[in-house]
Length: 248
Image 1 (cartoon, rainbow, N blue to C red):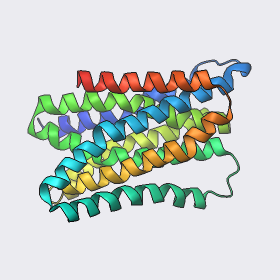
Image 2: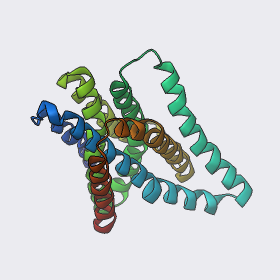
Image 3: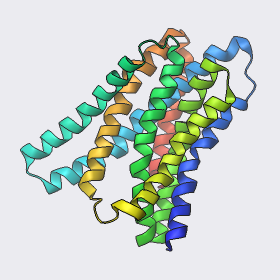
């Protein structure tokens, strides 16, 4: 595949995040807003933890364990994941003066997904260059989970700020990280990117996503006291993760 087409595939995969942001244009009645937010947060929790446990962590573990001796591999894995978790607490500390917890959740989600999408852009671009079918298949899989990731950014920011522009722009920033990863690979990193480097980054992202889901999103979802919507969001998220792995 040509460089342009490979970049195009990466761009389409990344910017599909904006499709999730479209959900803020749905008209939700005032007495249902908390239920809707609860459902979206729970759905996002399932997507983030599901992607981490079924994709990011297993792929990275296999690669690092294959390339390093056991003790060093375990150390690399632990540090990469642990630093990702600490990053959530660090960003949380930086935003300690931000009283709106929904807005904080949206920003934390955006940061997590920017870091997530950048190496995905590298992977999609390089896969597309080597094999057009592999690149398109990978892009479709990424699009499938980028849409709900867009929801995890847009919904909290929109309902915190009442600004569609802020919500969509934040979602756009997350999505644009993917084609930026692709073009950075072509211009700078092509000779230096290794499977181990990508694996460490993805473990770092998994640490961010799991910590963010458990420490921030879940307590916020529970605070609305709409348990059936929590269950509904979690179940739908799990189903989508399973469909993603079954199809791709």
